[in-house]
Length: 98
Length: 245
Image 1: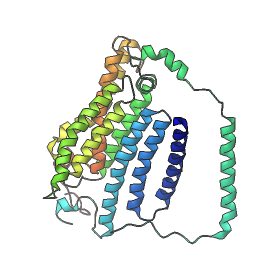
Image 2: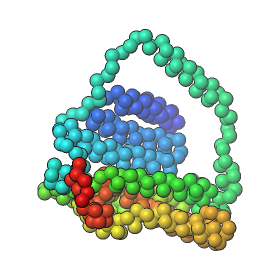
Image 3: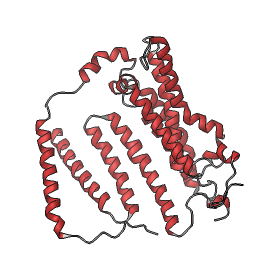
């Protein structure tokens, strides 16, 4: 019984992962792509747990989802600033000459 | 404002058969490789289990990462350091503290969470000796705490003195290298830990590396060197496009 539930869980997990991966690549809005990537990382960590690799799962959850996502988001914020027409993305606000 | 990926190029139907052929070929190749793969073999886990007692830790993953393949891990830590050096040489981190009224909910949550994250990170490093965990996982949690503080606009990078910040970034690689050289002097081979101190040496390396990894990840998120870095003190910023006097 529990075995059947686990198999069902695995199938749902795999299908969700594949769909999420497709969506990450296909989404036109980069922000939603990043958010989908974070959720993909979290589900991937679950998949690693199911593969009995808790070490990789921890690293995936912490690095793949927890840190790469925020890194992408901060890069996106800088990109938004460039799109708005601010000349240089980094130091102008401190120099006061931008 | 939303940023979108560039408009896709017009689909060229003439490429379709080629693409299909390529994808089918690739799939067939993969299927064939899976079929050829030996079944039941579990790599080197037997050898690892045999040498487990000598490794100083009881977790096989940590034994491989820090002991049997310690050289790889040393290089990984170096790569992370190089990434930070690259980011720092590009640009300064934007000044935090610009936002006068960060949400009190966020600030309170971060004030509560950051110490907790540090504690869990230490626990993960300690746990690396016998279960899942280790320097990278602990370091990632420390980095996460740093990211939270940066997001909540707490002056993380201003509060740490420039020299200490650099020293913290270097701590892991330096300790790792020092231990490697120590092994060279004591035992004759790089990273062949002497049997007497192997457990404490591994814990020392992991703790130092976790600190460095945490700082490195947080400063990568900040996106540049701290506002009062030594580099900027010695060479004051010159406006873009002008030559230095």
